[in-house]
Length: 230
Ligand code: ATP
Image 1: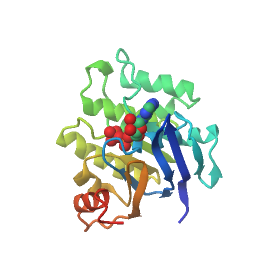
Image 2 (image 1 turned 45 degrees about the vertical axis):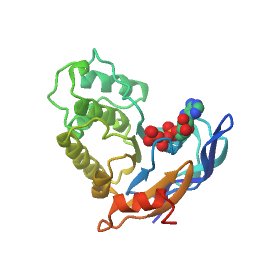
Image 3 (image 1 turned 30 degrees about the vertical axis):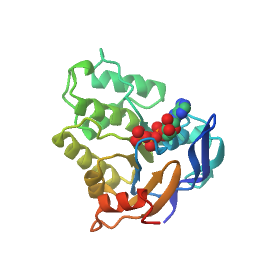
Image 4 (image 1 turned 60 degrees about the vertical axis):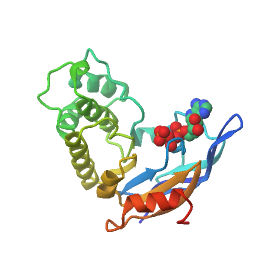
């Protein structure tokens, strides 16, 4: 199976601090790859480099077999930090703005609204629940039909129902051959979703493997970050 995304020796320094240290991850096409790590491990930094929001200090990224360049962003959707939502617009109108910017036909808007369960919703998005905002954020990321969806801690602040809905949505997306790179501290949730895991500790990739759903992810995580598991 081919990898949709690979990083090769990716390194990011902020002044004298190393946020990412020679990280090489491999994300197989069509899978859910969970990027795990304690606070400040470097997960968001990696995602920002892959989505062109930040420049690496050294190392490289390959997408779909080719060296990363800005054009690959047409095939990558992402939700990193807060969703870029205009509060005084409805979900349809928010998607309309992004569709126009990305030159996507309007017909795609209704498809995406259905996909994220926001069809028939006429509320202004400032009145949305956090779960609805997250779903709209994912909708914005999906508008151009990406091959790879990158979600940085999308479970943050969601209630159990919101988390379950997100899980269903991600499972649905992988059925449509979308690869998902997701970071989260919600380990039990990740254990339901992960096909592959990568664990980063202080900027270094300490473990990368296929995830066997019988494994205790919390135990594996704790052993890895404490250095027991190499
Ligand atoms: P969390 O789980 O808390 O979101 P993370 O794994 O996503 O953490 P990053 O946000 O990637 O971690 O941060 C990695 C390290 O890089 C941290 O020590 C952080 O303080 C530092 N860092 C990130 N962005 C910047 C920046 N723009 N300037 C300086 N340091 C930064």
